Each structure stands twice: as structure tokens, then as C-alpha cells.
Amino acid sequence: MSGEGRPRLPVVDASNLALAIAGTRWHPEVTDSLVERATAAAKESGVEDMLVVRVAEIGRASCRERV
Image (cartoon, rainbow, N blue to C red):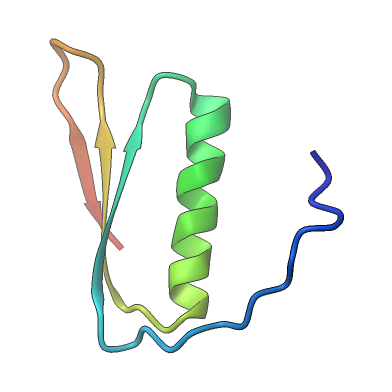
């Protein structure tokens, strides 16, 4: 998907918010992109307190990363 035709939304001021982003590891090509885009959007909105959690498969430990 090219993203062509996607509506342009105004950037909101979220600088006073803390945010957690959770992403799975089932398909890294897809989920890595989703987490990267969510992180970029949060930074663009002024979020500084952000926690990214990657949830592993059953039987594996999850990974947590403070951004």
C-alpha cells in the first residue's frame, strides 16, 4: 500500500501524556513497522514518556524497552 489518498490529520499536542505501545513478535516485518510508526507519531506529538513492550510467543519472555 502506498498510502496515497490517506487523509492528512493535524498533529495533536500530547506532550503531557505518558504512553505505552504494545507490539507482538509474530511477524517482525509487519509488527516492527507498526511499532516504529506508532513511536514516530508519538514523538511527533511531543510524547517524551514512552514505554514500548514487545510481547513474545507463549513460553518466551517479553521484552520491555523504555524510549
